[in-house]
Length: 379
Image 1 (tube, rainbow, N blue to C red):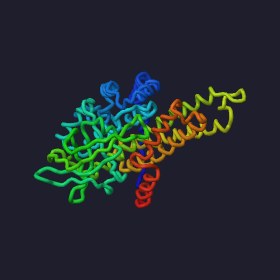
Image 2 (spheres, one colour):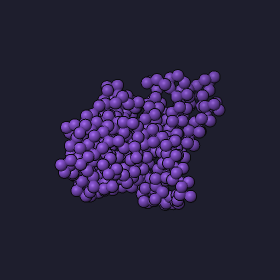
Image 3 (cartoon, one colour):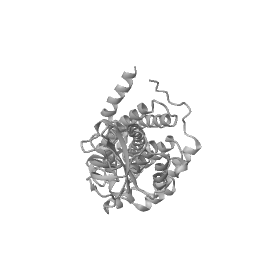
Image 4 (tube, one colour):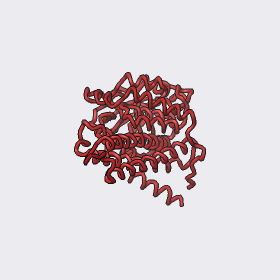
């Protein structure tokens, strides 16, 4: 398998404008003090922030223009996800992104016209119910079922770790049909037979829910027309690329927090950053962030180019970014000392996001096993 990445994928002035605008807006709208107040008040969803993000066009950034999206590329999304990761943007953005991608991949023209404009405009919060009650999220681990009945379908099963599930008015979920094939369904919420239960999430900025389908009856229009298995796989690849970029942004924020602390904190009349035991881990963090960013950009460029190796690049980026983020928060906590584990230390919030992000859509071990199969079998 050729793993070529386009050589001309470098950032343009348009990319720079997006990064600058995202950094300015999020810096003004969501400083850490604001995020702390929101979490202390127990709020999980800032409707005002959601509306502003929709007005900026971020909710439909990579969705087709004919359905209300901006029609931009994955390199644009990579930049945006980095900036959102830097600020730990709360809310259901990731779930909405994945649901929109799944609808684009599997929905018919009429189904996309029905749902995508409302998602892009922020009028409807959507999410993708991916993870089975047993923890699996690939097509071959599906236990949720869709049985044809009276021209429609009866849906049964349990989905866990649904991002923003309690706030969603549309859920896209995968089910196994009697033939063994995977099908995606778009279900409006609330619907009779659908139960939603909040989960206790390690990351309070990204609440999740369990969604149960207990004999839910839907019409044939709820089933997305495209091949469900292929659409689910494509959505997961794009989700890995997006999460990798977000993790890069979070790791970079930790790097900057630790750098500033190493300059300000003094011991033996010198900044602690003077000592090799502190400066060397900071340099290691910086090297890891830049390497992970390169892989995340490569995955985005491969998706933009329609490369058949995009899955390989996305899995590589997700695997490394998860490890880099975890290493950064671990070192960040250590350098801050006992204070680093407390709610009062900003690194604490990134620590939680890193713990949440690492297993979502597969951790490094999961992806490296797949990469071994993809690359070695191809050879």
